[in-house]
Image (cartoon, rainbow, N blue to C red; front, side, top):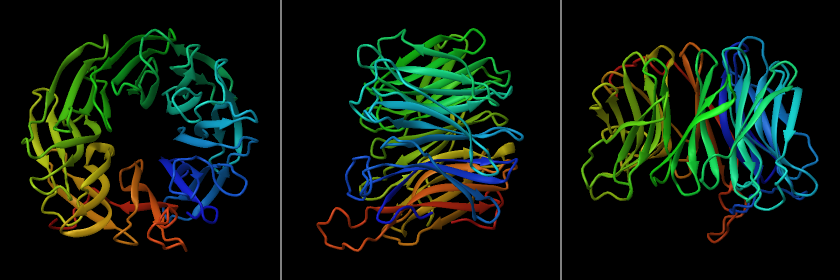
Length: 457
């Protein structure tokens, strides 16, 4: 997907709408300057964009750009409601004073036209620290079994820190049903990365991190509209993954121990938030792991975690570090490192389990001595960890697509990958910050990722 000329298109996340057979990606645009300023173009603005693609052909169906007076708009999440419901996008926008407002918008899935919009701002927000954790922001969405839209975000507090904020909406009208700002902790500035709701639409769980680098988890009572418990543990850095088992009434987090040495899997009791134990996966000292994502295979009773493993004396390359852990015994029952594969992701970004648990898919970026750099996708047998299907993709092996997010089709017969594709610019000077900073969105579809095509390797 091409954006404005000389732009840096920044894809954020992707979802699949099974009722309309659409793949919907959201993101924003920032400058082609190699820096971290979030502005673009001669008019010094940033645009938030949602794009829907036909899941069968990949053709663009509609494109929606957030049309506000703000100079900096960004979409952070997208969720498709069931049946004929709308597509929800969340994020933030700024007003003429530079104050950041959280934003929730419902789109017509057939046309991409707005159905309703809500913006909100903390009374303590100001124009400082744009896109910092002190700002008002709508981060994550979840749709309950009753069709209710739940949104998590941050809300600037009176002391200048940020508090976790929850909002619930009527899906048809966009009317705010209730909102809750949780201030009952001493943490500084929180970022919610994961939001999940139970089948009965009575409870929700949020996971993320605070500015101290601690992993945080929250349990939200949707009926009484209050936070039952809050936990902030450890000082683990880098990416992390979260999962939940409704039948076992447990929550899980996968983080990295200090020094990037090993994965740490921690189990929590849903009812109380009490820790039920933690384990490390026991990799050798000279093969450190760094976690990136976690998923739970309910039928198999396996927690599957992924990340990268650095092989001995090979600092310039890495292997996939995917493990299967028995939820009953806390034993590592299989490992898949992909060291014999030409396409396995050496920098895994995303992990997804197919509907029906027919396989687990790891998507990331390959960088190993066997094959040039590329976007890679590997499906694994959940019970054994053995590879079923592998594929790699790159338009330029030296500047490959950077994997951002994945989404399965409802029946598991296809998986869709969102990536950022670097493009060469006209300025080819070695010292130029503009040399490789122009990017486009890239959306890829893979058919039957859980079907074997024969020997893999």
